Length: 140
Image 1: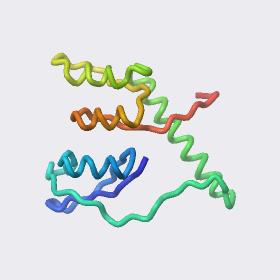
Image 2: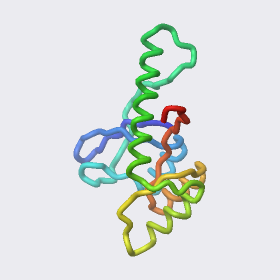
Image 3: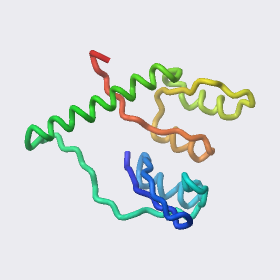
Image 4: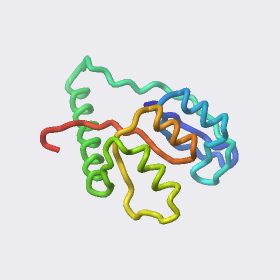
């Protein structure tokens, strides 16, 4: 996953957006699928960003605490997803298309497993799909 800070050249607001790769971002940009979250303009660009890397070689206790905070936030979000969305497992791409193309809208969203290629294909079809890091936790 890669996070870009995007800026709208129409309303001059900026926001963060996640992509599975820089290639995915470029592909969506070229096809003009990117729109401003605030004004729906397609005149979007990346801002200059510093990389945000998580190292497995912790230097001090603060690094360990920050990693624990990150893990805790991910686990909280996982619980939210489990409680508010339907787990469709490995049928995610199929169910996402079914839900998108079905004229009868479902009230509950879905989550499940999909490959990067499946997610890219869904996005190309105009079906919004995202990856999220999933932590298998004994206490979760």
